[in-house]
Image (cartoon, rainbow, N blue to C red; front, side):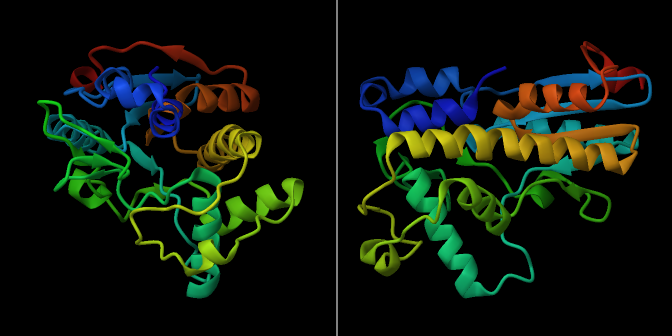
Length: 258
């Protein structure tokens, strides 16, 4: 599977990809026109995984929408990625946690590509021939909001869990006065070791374990997961841990013969 999250971080945080951005984007699957179906299956449950990109070609998202439509008609329940704030979290606490997230990541992902300037996170100029867009919102992809399940960790819980082990994320005066909508973030970032800890164990492992638990508790036997493609192997390992009967299978004609 293509590791979009890791590649995107590599793209945004290292200098060598400033020279070869199109190569990095291609490897991350940003230029794909078709989405890939990966399947984890046990005797009692089938999980179809559609690996998403935070930005890419319109044709890719059209293909995702077509697959979502077909699979929902086959009674698959959607479990989707969406790191946001809890409804009960007050706005000041939410903004503080969003700023802590920005401190950890070095940017705040309001949008991944500016479709007017073709800048990726306002750091890298994209001058390729492909027209790129940000991932459409789930209703635009045809996700049934009534039956679909938000299977992700909210920002408050994610930050609190990280701080339990690693201590409070200190926001300096620059962080506090710089708005989240500010495109050019110049405040001091956390060191690379702290960033790697957050990326791997919290953006990755912690959320994947949570996703697996939500699926497991649901008792749905037909599951469609819409999540960043970097999380497929983590989800597989977590499902395998919960039930050793799970394996990766291949069903190339699944949409025709269900």
